[in-house]
Length: 267
Image 1 (cartoon, rainbow, N blue to C red):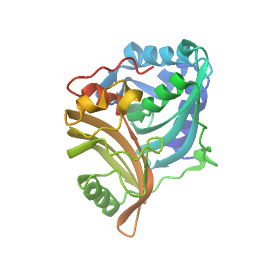
Image 2: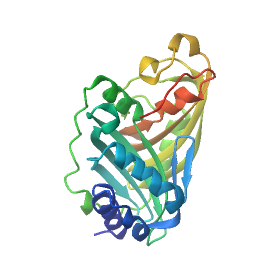
Image 3: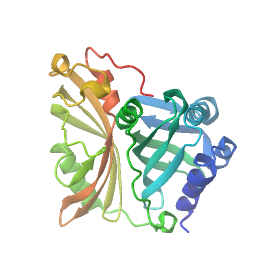
């Protein structure tokens, strides 16, 4: 088994699905940093573990299901779903997608750029209608390292510059909306493993609508307001173009970034 993949098996099975934070010092450096949307959770013991424990208390049966893993040996992208029932929502259930871009030092995790579809989670907890959990990866722990492909990376960089998010790539839970117009993109992280390219992007532009009541905002009042959207993607390149993949966007974070937000808690 690839060493990085073996570490992630412990992350998923021993830590997350068992809710056993005593595993964290064995798989994460003390300075482990999680970056999600505009937020930075830096410090394994001081900030990261307490944030995880809060999540476990809200979802005492929380599970993480892996759908896809790719790695070049030094970096790793994992697409997953988290699912469970919330004690703060009368036991209502939800299943939401996530995508993390992990970095390690050859022994332990040091950093993760991640997004989770908290807007979909919020909607499911409000309506009491949970989404189905996607099919798990057949054998995620058998993933093998693939060398980086600079040509594929360049294709994706150009695709991002042209306004990534349309065409063959699935956004969030299938939402077709563009959300921002006249947008510019900053690539915060990007790496490849064979034909697979993972990236984290910050987009800024003007709000075009599409979030609506699910995000607790007035679309009509905020259309045209400046906004910032963070997203994480994992796509496949073939024949010099992006042919498929997934993007998970911080849609609730975008709502909060608008000039007159009225958003409540993401939970």
